[in-house]
Image 1: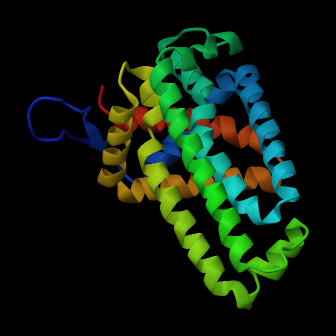
Image 2: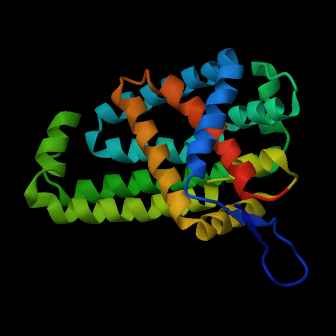
Amino acid sequence: MSDPESPPGQGFALPSVRRVSLARPRNWLKSGWHDMRSNPVTSLSYGLLFGIAGAVVLIFSWSKPYLFTAAVSGFILIAPLLAGGLYEISRRQAEGQPATLLESLDGWRRNGQSMAMFGLLLALVALVWERTSAVIFALLVPGMAPDLSSFIFDVLLNPEFAGITLAWFMVGTCLAILVFAVSAVSIPMLIDRDVDFVTAMITSLRATVLNPDVMFLWAVLVVTLTLAGFATLLLGLVLTMPLLGHASWHAYQDLVEK
């Protein structure tokens, strides 16, 4: 049973957020699957775009193996913005409106300035993380491995570099948690409402803080399905990314009061 909560105080009012049960992510995925089945051509077209983006990530990182994890995590950071069209499809689906590929582009146009500002912030975070990873390994790991497999076994799994790898992993994890917390429902909210990106970020953070167990489970599912997409030679991304995009819309609808 949901439990709406609003911030105290007067003046500027943020949208109310709900407490939801730990079972809700399953329902989000189920509803996302329904939206994808109802709009297979449009949804899978976006999935194909995600697959192409994933291929670009792998091509870029294969020649720079020390950036592989940074590149993949950067892909996950930017993915909520790229899924704007999928959120629009789900929004139209709920209202009984057509959702062709052309019409789904309205998702980015409806609140374009705030979307652009939030996208710029995500891109900046991804760039900082990529540069940080490059500097750490360039300075501290001599004789960089020539390819991805060598890097995994010679650096990441090498006890000699365990301290560096652990510190790098912890920094990346903290950054990922922060970005997830402020972006979990931000983009769907920007598409659905005429709000600025700061309001959307604060609302997303409050929804995450109010539902730490639910959002932790949701983050694990997002990362797992995304990595599964990469592990299947990117073919899985064509299916998993539209599913997650639609499901994220339903997560927003569940977590944020109208």
